[in-house]
Amino acid sequence: MPDLRTGLQHLYLRDEDLRLGIELLFYAYRDFTAEPDRMLDDIGLGRAHHRAIYFVGRYPGINVGELLAILRITKQSLSRVLGELVRKGYISQRPGTIDRRQRRLELTEMGAALERKLSENQRRRIAAAYRAAGPNAVEGFRRVMLGLIDERDRGKVAGEPVRPVAAATARR
Amino acid sequence: MPDLRTGLQHLYLRDEDLRLGIELLFYAYRDFTAEPDRMLDDIGLGRAHHRAIYFVGRYPGINVGELLAILRITKQSLSRVLGELVRKGYISQRPGTIDRRQRRLELTEMGAALERKLSENQRRRIAAAYRAAGPNAVEGFRRVMLGLIDERDRGKVAGEPVRPVAAATARR
DNA sequence: CATATATGTCAACATCACTGACGTATCTTG
DNA sequence: CAAGATACGTCAGTGATGTTGACATATATG
Image (cartoon, rainbow over all chains, first blue to last red; front, side, top):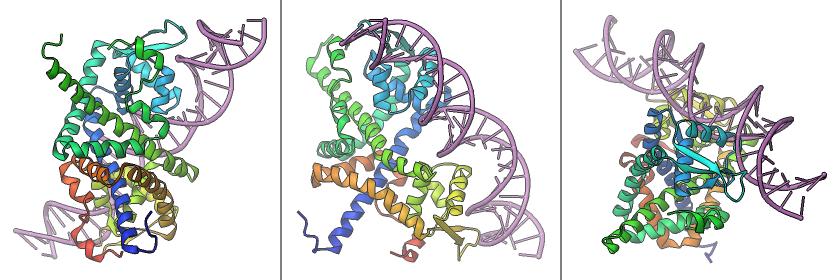
């Protein structure tokens, strides 16, 4: 426990640390998304499409509700985005086998190609940052980032499947 | 397909690492902005206003061009946001003393209060993540995040002033 | 059968960004 | 000083992404 009396300097530095954290998140996210955004713009898509494509690629067979829970947007917003992606041939769908109300989503070949192209850019950026920072720093990065995420979603990032049942079902 | 088991596995893990990085950034940014967004919504402002208020608070006396360079949006977009903030009394402006074409921006008392309220939330989240991860992890977090940022802006985050002259002038 | 759930759709709207064109005040330089 | 560059503003139009609210349909479940 920090001694509150000790002081101003300690407190000041701490505030600086937090401010730095805020700015790191702003600048990193700004630069992390800038290049994919530009590529997407060239083919008439936006960041929202990227996110949908990414998570459909990540969880093949994911349904709309699960995707909504990840993206935290309204179904109306997602519906527009998914509709465009299906219409343009990036995403295919078929009814769930167990629950036929569900739309199970998958990337088409074209969708997978786009996903690779977009995330390759981001992977490269991350790889460069990881290499420059070293393995120790990477572990720290992970720990802090996980702590920033709402508790209920930490499992998702840490490798837990979106839908327990699907873990066994999904081809990989 | 696994010819060289070790090689493939290594490659697989590495890809996993990068994928994790992508997702950490998505989820962390999503959750980092959600609560301030809600507060802003209550007073009819949005995330863009938050960013402007934040950086005006960070660099009192900053001018429009410098703010544009940080935010990387068009002057038309920023103009709208700044105009609203000035009209609503969160930001004050006065011509630069050296170059009178410039608008030097500062937070009003009201603006500073709002800034504190919004960033307090984010500071708390960061503080919690830092505490949970430990000082070593924090250093790693910083190193990786810095590496994600475009090289030309790393200095800004690392404490370099936006405008060398202002460093001496700015109160604080 | 009744109800809940998964998803979709229509409509209206706000925010935040963009491009392009043009205007004005002020600084800088030949 | 005249001419051009710079800092900033504004008008107009557009698009992407999000929202709320209301209602529809198919399917699952008790």
